[in-house]
Amino acid sequence: MKIAIIIVRTLIGLLFLFTSISYFFNLMPEPVATGNFKAFQIGIVASSYLIPLAKTVELLSGLSFVIGRYVTLANIAILPVTINILLINFFLTPENLPIALFVFLGNLFLIFTHWENYKGVFVAK
Image (cartoon, rainbow, N blue to C red; front, side):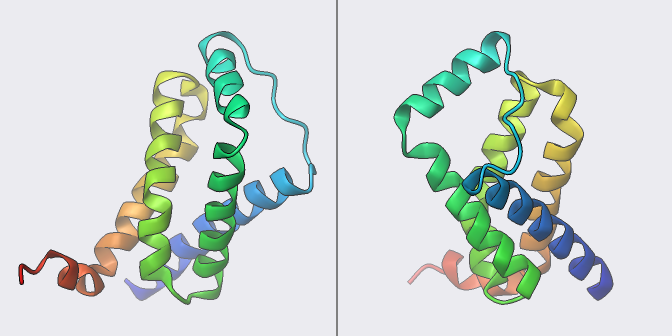
Protein backbone atom coordinates (compact mmCIF):
# COMPACT_ATOMS: atom_id res chain seq x y z
CA MET A 1 0.00 0.00 0.00
CA LYS A 2 2.88 2.34 0.78
CA ILE A 3 4.23 1.98 -2.77
CA ALA A 4 0.80 2.75 -4.25
CA ILE A 5 0.57 5.91 -2.12
CA ILE A 6 3.99 7.08 -3.32
CA ILE A 7 3.17 6.32 -6.97
CA VAL A 8 -0.23 8.09 -6.93
CA ARG A 9 1.13 11.02 -4.94
CA THR A 10 4.10 11.47 -7.27
CA LEU A 11 2.08 11.15 -10.49
CA ILE A 12 -0.52 13.68 -9.33
CA GLY A 13 2.20 15.97 -8.02
CA LEU A 14 4.10 15.88 -11.31
CA LEU A 15 0.90 16.52 -13.26
CA PHE A 16 0.07 19.55 -11.11
CA LEU A 17 3.63 20.84 -11.36
CA PHE A 18 3.64 20.44 -15.14
CA THR A 19 0.32 22.23 -15.66
CA SER A 20 1.06 25.09 -13.28
CA ILE A 21 4.63 25.71 -14.46
CA SER A 22 3.57 25.59 -18.10
CA TYR A 23 0.81 28.11 -17.29
CA PHE A 24 3.08 30.56 -15.45
CA PHE A 25 5.90 30.38 -18.01
CA ASN A 26 3.66 30.04 -21.11
CA LEU A 27 5.46 26.86 -22.17
CA MET A 28 2.53 25.44 -24.11
CA PRO A 29 -0.14 27.16 -26.17
CA GLU A 30 -3.66 27.07 -24.78
CA PRO A 31 -5.81 24.52 -26.60
CA VAL A 32 -8.51 25.97 -28.82
CA ALA A 33 -11.80 26.06 -26.94
CA THR A 34 -15.17 25.70 -28.66
CA GLY A 35 -18.83 25.82 -27.75
CA ASN A 36 -19.91 26.02 -24.13
CA PHE A 37 -16.37 25.48 -22.85
CA LYS A 38 -15.22 28.58 -24.75
CA ALA A 39 -17.92 30.69 -23.08
CA PHE A 40 -16.99 29.22 -19.69
CA GLN A 41 -13.28 29.85 -20.27
CA ILE A 42 -13.93 33.46 -21.30
CA GLY A 43 -15.80 34.00 -18.04
CA ILE A 44 -13.04 32.50 -15.92
CA VAL A 45 -10.33 34.50 -17.69
CA ALA A 46 -12.42 37.66 -17.28
CA SER A 47 -12.38 37.23 -13.51
CA SER A 48 -8.58 37.79 -13.75
CA TYR A 49 -7.83 36.12 -10.41
CA LEU A 50 -9.36 32.65 -10.56
CA ILE A 51 -6.95 30.88 -12.90
CA PRO A 52 -3.78 32.28 -11.26
CA LEU A 53 -5.21 31.29 -7.86
CA ALA A 54 -6.00 27.75 -8.99
CA LYS A 55 -2.58 27.39 -10.67
CA THR A 56 -0.84 28.64 -7.52
CA VAL A 57 -2.70 26.05 -5.42
CA GLU A 58 -1.76 23.41 -8.01
CA LEU A 59 1.90 24.47 -7.87
CA LEU A 60 2.09 24.37 -4.07
CA SER A 61 0.15 21.11 -3.83
CA GLY A 62 2.24 19.55 -6.60
CA LEU A 63 5.44 20.48 -4.77
CA SER A 64 4.02 19.05 -1.56
CA PHE A 65 3.04 15.78 -3.25
CA VAL A 66 6.39 15.33 -4.99
CA ILE A 67 8.44 16.20 -1.91
CA GLY A 68 6.16 14.23 0.42
CA ARG A 69 5.76 16.96 3.04
CA TYR A 70 2.48 18.57 4.16
CA VAL A 71 0.55 16.06 2.05
CA THR A 72 -2.42 16.17 4.45
CA LEU A 73 -2.76 19.93 3.95
CA ALA A 74 -2.19 19.70 0.20
CA ASN A 75 -4.95 17.06 -0.12
CA ILE A 76 -7.50 19.43 1.37
CA ALA A 77 -6.20 22.52 -0.45
CA ILE A 78 -6.36 20.83 -3.86
CA LEU A 79 -9.73 19.08 -3.33
CA PRO A 80 -11.91 21.99 -4.61
CA VAL A 81 -9.64 22.31 -7.64
CA THR A 82 -9.91 18.60 -8.45
CA ILE A 83 -13.69 18.69 -8.03
CA ASN A 84 -13.88 21.58 -10.49
CA ILE A 85 -11.53 19.83 -12.91
CA LEU A 86 -13.78 16.76 -12.78
CA LEU A 87 -17.03 18.69 -13.25
CA ILE A 88 -15.70 20.90 -16.04
CA ASN A 89 -14.44 17.86 -17.92
CA PHE A 90 -17.60 15.87 -17.25
CA PHE A 91 -19.98 18.56 -18.51
CA LEU A 92 -17.94 20.57 -21.02
CA THR A 93 -14.99 18.56 -22.34
CA PRO A 94 -15.70 14.84 -21.87
CA GLU A 95 -12.74 13.84 -24.05
CA ASN A 96 -10.44 14.77 -21.15
CA LEU A 97 -12.51 12.92 -18.54
CA PRO A 98 -10.04 10.02 -17.95
CA ILE A 99 -7.32 12.40 -16.72
CA ALA A 100 -9.83 14.32 -14.60
CA LEU A 101 -11.07 11.06 -13.06
CA PHE A 102 -7.51 10.00 -12.28
CA VAL A 103 -6.76 13.31 -10.55
CA PHE A 104 -10.01 13.32 -8.55
CA LEU A 105 -9.91 9.66 -7.54
CA GLY A 106 -6.20 9.94 -6.77
CA ASN A 107 -6.94 12.88 -4.48
CA LEU A 108 -9.68 10.89 -2.74
CA PHE A 109 -7.30 7.93 -2.41
CA LEU A 110 -4.66 10.13 -0.77
CA ILE A 111 -7.25 11.59 1.60
CA PHE A 112 -8.39 8.07 2.51
CA THR A 113 -4.83 6.90 3.15
CA HIS A 114 -4.16 9.90 5.41
CA TRP A 115 -7.54 9.69 7.16
CA GLU A 116 -5.97 9.44 10.63
CA ASN A 117 -4.70 13.00 10.19
CA TYR A 118 -8.21 14.32 9.52
CA LYS A 119 -10.04 12.70 12.43
CA GLY A 120 -9.44 15.69 14.72
CA VAL A 121 -11.39 17.92 12.37
CA PHE A 122 -14.56 15.86 12.87
CA VAL A 123 -14.45 15.62 16.67
CA ALA A 124 -17.13 17.66 18.46
CA LYS A 125 -15.81 19.69 21.36
